[in-house]
Length: 230
Image (cartoon, rainbow, N blue to C red; front, side, top):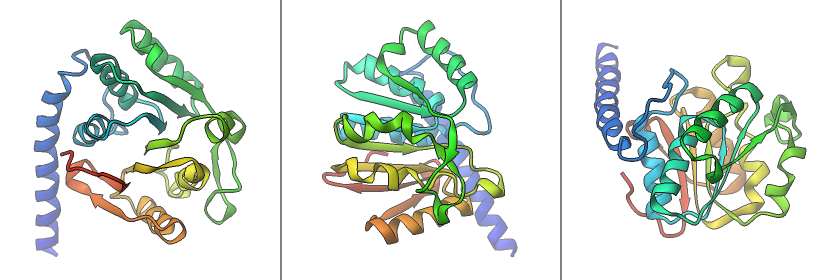
């Protein structure tokens, strides 16, 4: 028992040290202040995400759950002059208004399509129970957009026990439009709900996820030419 606690604390310390280092790197992308909260992506995971975009030359990014990552991805696209289509989905219209203002004030709004999709009952939810983003708002991503080569899943909210499987529909919904050369990144993999979701995705869609707690508490499935990005 004591050894388990020691191992847990050691991993937590290592991740925090890596987060501090990652924050220093991120200043090269966006030097201004942003409201990091307990719900925000780990800086180390964010560096992994930006490295994946750069090294694997992603062309179509879909983000479920807008936030700090949205700002940094836009900053990377602008700074490096990347030819990238970036769609970011969120259920909270008020939060999107705040984010839109941050992006506008930093001349970044043109690099992302912010999509407001309220939560609604979804046939793709695990065991047909729960809510996900309104599919009517996402039809253009399923029919008229280029293949998705980076799917980043950090929403909808899933912290409460009754919401623990809320992120499951992301892969079922977008699976048919995911490129053959892709990364799928799921945040918060230390939670049981997310680990349950990954097991279901692996069974149903022949995916192979690797849990990377020390890379920012994320789980990653990749196909194609994948390089070590962190």
